[in-house]
Image 1: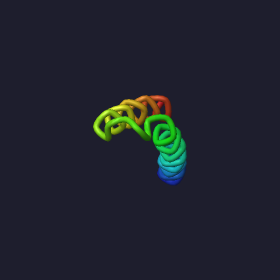
Image 2 (image 1 turned 180 degrees about the horizontal axis):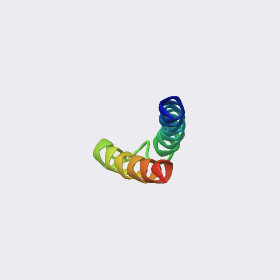
Image 3 (image 1 turned 120 degrees about the vertical axis):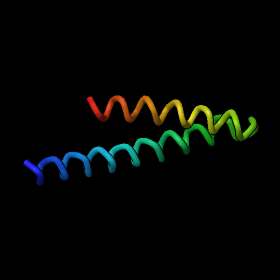
Image 4 (image 1 turned 135 degrees about the vertical axis):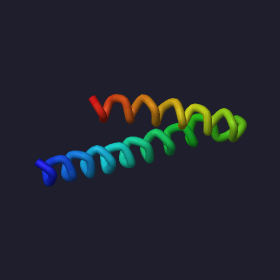
Length: 56
């Protein structure tokens, strides 16, 4: 049980990092001329959504 839990949490963290990097690149492409604060806020929102989906 512990091994499977570690494996699943590792998988979730890897998947989260993968999605986050994609989202980050996409947002950088979209909002390269916008303010950094706006970009950071969107990244936080996207990350929260991804975390919620990964935990379900």
